[in-house]
Length: 246
Image (tube, rainbow, N blue to C red; front, side, top):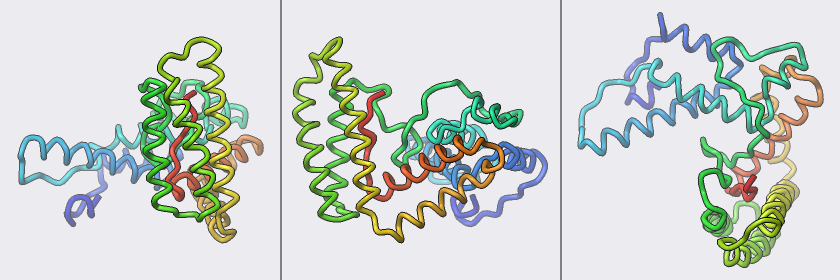
């Protein structure tokens, strides 16, 4: 926050201390808290730019609390740490944490919001995915083997996009199921193509991110959460979008 506030010192005392302590009690990883702070500042900068304001006061920790909790809620859903999973291990979400609906885990490609089809038509979703795949292909972060996979998936998605607008019923369900399969195939291919040292680094980072939950989750739930974090890191590294439209 000092960096975001152009070096202005932040006093974490009183209500601010209670809020930050609450983040720790709720098991919010530091990386997630920083993403929530980033989200608040991005909105704050946009708002001031739209008003033409040039001077601003330093942002306080309290202003970022809602965004941190929102990002935490998204993170927990993405890695499958639901209230049910914690209850199975005899734990619960700390009081004051975000509400937890029992929804299926959502994948993430590194942004603060889901990159899947929520809020978009199927055709618009495919258009967005193709643009992101084109960008990932241009960056070529993994290598020619992954580029060939992206090319093949892009060709299939481009053909599907031409028909998506008029699909109904069983045909639409079949396409959505195929998108989930392509999404899995893309992530698996990227994981396989990564250098072993990079994959090992992601494993270590996932352990670090989930450190507060290792003793709070059943072994199976922890393994699923760990795998979800690793896959998210792979997506971020390879710049891969979420193809799944569920």
